[in-house]
Image 1 (cartoon, one colour):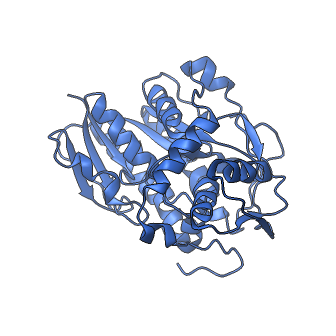
Image 2 (cartoon, rainbow, N blue to C red):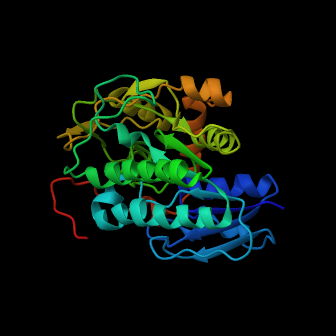
Image 3 (cartoon, rainbow, N blue to C red):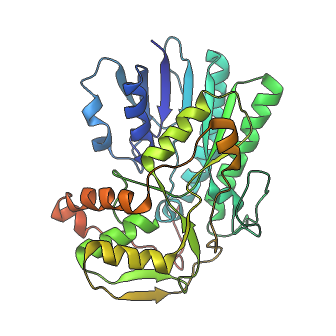
Length: 328
């Protein structure tokens, strides 16, 4: 039985990856310090013999006994609310955490896949964004702690690949949504869903003309799975290329929920990207991958998931306020 370590295992994507690799017959080692993850996302796996969990911070030395065939590094805050609240931890998990896991992969002679992000493109001057675009990032802006953590993560991964001959993969993840997202975590889909379910007005930052492209989680996991077992070592965009404006998306949510809510507008945060659309030509050619789940279908699944949450969970609000200083 092949053994795989998944960091950020209790997070949104990490927990879905745990499910997928259990289904594929792997022995899965999940690791998370629960700084943003939720143990509820993986507790259904605890009774299984081929799943084990370590409560551990990967910025500290990482040890996994016996053999290890694969590592998926998905430990990182991923929402604006999170990385603005904990900027130092965000930088550390991208730098120290990645260094530790690359060292573990080298020791175990394991293949390692690093989760990067479309945020490495910053507020792009090229549209759509292909993997050969270097990005437009403000290193000292509020979003820089996340953007630069991921850019460094890619750099050190390629350094280990070139210098040590380490078997590496890099996935650049574009906006993904699905069950197990944290409601109201600052990302567009759960933010709108939370407001809709509470009957609040839908909040748009900016004039709503900025665009995003939303990929359903099952498609994202399939792309990551194919990349891990490919022979391709350069970064690969995995996302849905069907672009929509935030205003149009808010209108879709109102139609889906059947609640006639207002849309209110607030100032656009500093360096918030105006466009976000992946060029997935490389994923199509190298992996034979493209998204299958239509947005209407995926949003219905997510809406039903959020509706099933407790009233207490629905009332939790995590405020996205970029004007206030953050405490490390």
